[in-house]
Length: 334
View 1: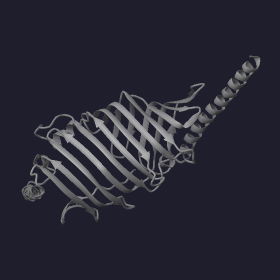
View 2: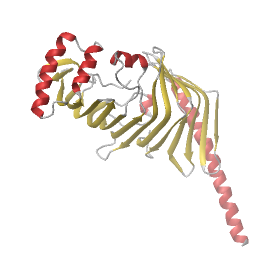
View 3: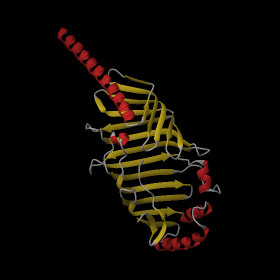
């Protein structure tokens, strides 16, 4: 019994020393990271940093955090931010955001509120801590730009990402948003007759993206990884009587210009076309001709209410067959 007691005491002391060394190391690593950002010209400040959680966790809490990258114009402010890690598994991290935070871009500032925003993050034990998998959830999410009267909201949002076996820089993403409600000013533009409900019945995304480098610490410190191939397995949105689905594959060049084909399936497509015309997104003079052409396409497919349209992306534009519809989106992450 005496030997067992000595063994327990020694083990407890050894673990206490391990935790003390680990917590001190975690604090110093965070301090060094902020110092490194300031040396790069960032605004990187906090009023306090503490690490607790003995005996099984390293719980680090930042108070009054401010980060601003002068190269991209992105900035973030929060009254606190927490990073939790198991002391016996430090590469599995839980991040917790406050109920209110501020995100600024060169275009606008956004007030972001939620009742519970957190992420579970697993990294590989390698330099730069490359991402292995991530799950981010938020409840009662509201994003309020300083240019709009009402926020865009969602009852709940889940974003999941996982590295695929294809390469170290290939990730599969999944996104679902329940009770997604666009901002009022945007709804008025899209649906001036107020014929659609306030929120979408479904909004989801499933895709695999190959980037030019892995998502790791350098994605924050230096530059975001840029997509060079996107395999869109399914994007879906249901809003009242309208339903859109999209799938396809594109490659993306160094300037962010996509090339490939996306097939769009639209149910009740005439209503969608009418909304585009009423909102001014589609010129009235072109609407009739486009509707006649799409009607022929849908009839050939056997269902006049459903439209399957392959959209080609090439030379920086979107094409319906040989007809150019407009400029293609530029796929660059700031």
